[in-house]
Image 1 (cartoon, rainbow, N blue to C red):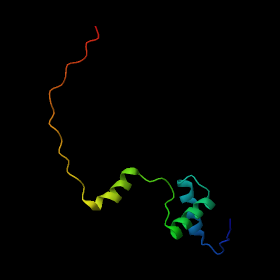
Image 2: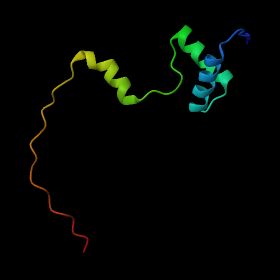
Image 3: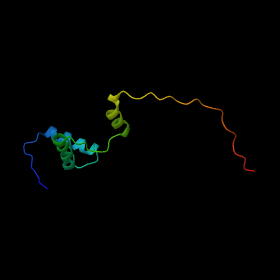
Image 4: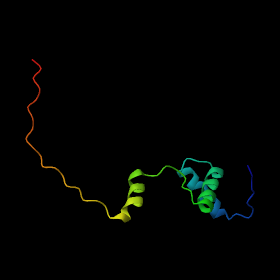
Length: 81
């Protein structure tokens, strides 16, 4: 694996990186890797919400209207005697 050194980083940027890393329970180094990976590869950092993913994939298709069957009378409960 390669490594890089970033010089002349503004103090404000470093502070914000530290805060962001703490919010995600990661080290600053790991947070920087995640940010770079997302920026360069377009990858997401963690698991996505399944409902959001499904809506994103199938929302443009317009959805489907399903006909629900009519509800019938309830059946008698079983007799365990």
